[in-house]
Image (cartoon, rainbow, N blue to C red; front, side):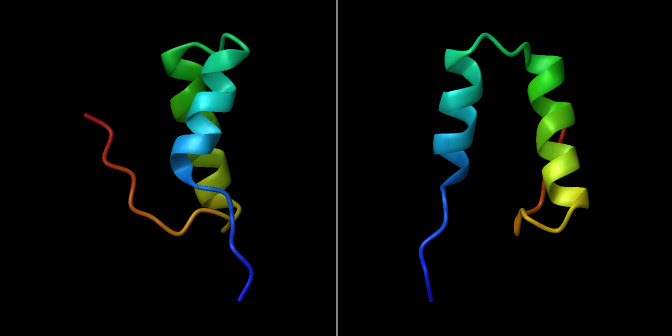
Length: 44
């Protein structure tokens, strides 16, 4: 099984290019909807 990218790596990369928190949430939700994120997102 090949190793994937961690969620922390994704968040750090997006933060590095100046993504807003709202956009970050939308991006993570899109990744989840595409089936590429195997985690539960709890948005509070």
